[in-house]
Amino acid sequence: MLQKLLHFTLIIFLALFSMSLGGANPAEVFAHYAAAIKNKRGTQYFAVIKVIDINRGTAREICAPGSFIRSALHKELKYDYDDQSVAMVEHMALMSLDRVFEFKNTEAIALLGSEQYTEMELVAFEKQVDIKSLARQIRSWGTWRMEFKDDKQMLLYAHALFNQGILTGEDSKQLGTLFYVK
Image (cartoon, rainbow, N blue to C red; front, top):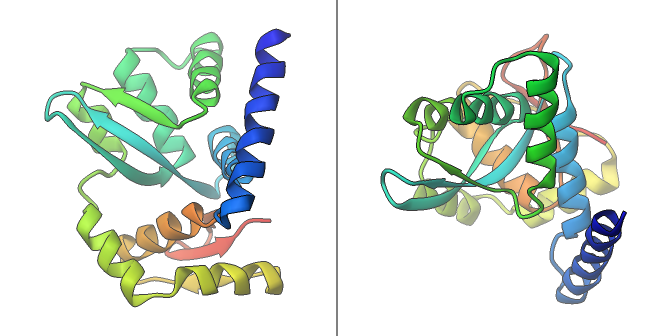
């Protein structure tokens, strides 16, 4: 009970602090992350996590579907896919309020798509596309879809939009279509 109260207090504090700075609301960002982790439908929701690669001694943000994040944690922890293990992985993912995970298993890191794009490519993309403006438009429109010919471009959009507090998903019936998840 105390842990839940502390968790709630931390989220409220971060939300108020962030709003005073004009950034994305951390409570909203965490809610989007939780939705991606919990989502078990065919449509994949994207979330951004920070991956610490113990082998290389590197740390970076990576955008991946929630199911890929769960699978990477299963692989890293050597957990099976029985009901108890699935519940434990989901719980562990949701208890990581900062969304930071350490990985040593190279297969687990590969599942996250760490080679899809670099941090420099994300920075260059954000200089080309006015993501803050796009995020405001998406919120005001209440709907948004965009088709992509390659996964890299879609991941760049999903990553940048997630960091602006916009949850996106890939339509399982139309692969390559990124859409706004309300």
